[in-house]
Image (cartoon, rainbow, N blue to C red; front, side, top):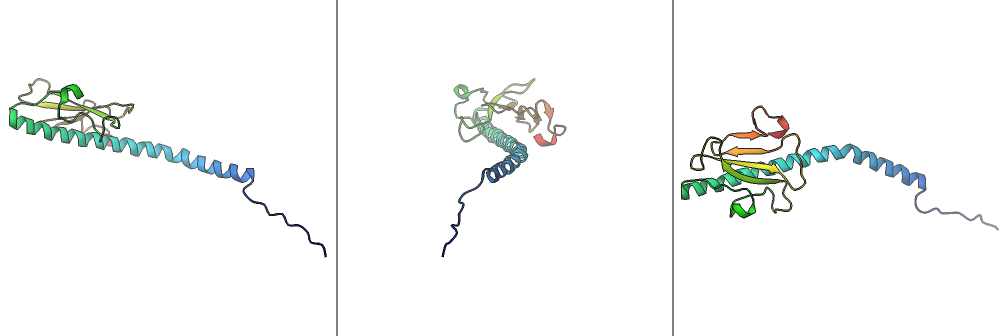
Length: 150
């Protein structure tokens, strides 16, 4: 009695593999813009949190020295918060402090969070907070800034 040999195919054919790759590619194509949007929102929230933390430091400094502290980078910041993330290298924003326009550091301080480290935010740009509680987004009051930037 003769038996017909059965062929057992293992693995995938090239056509099956190409179909799977096309489906994965289309899913990635459609989900990447949403991922970028969420990443930008997270970085903006990180910048706002850094501004609030830096403002708290400024207020403590003001109660001890009767003036605010101006800084623009790590060399002049001292113990003040000058980047937005957990580490300088992973931060999307740099925080700086200066006197408010038309005022001195004994009256008001303006904190600015500027995109840095390869992060570019065309929609919102620089976020600011002053000791009077006024917030702006690239020079616009936060009330009239784009919804995504608030």
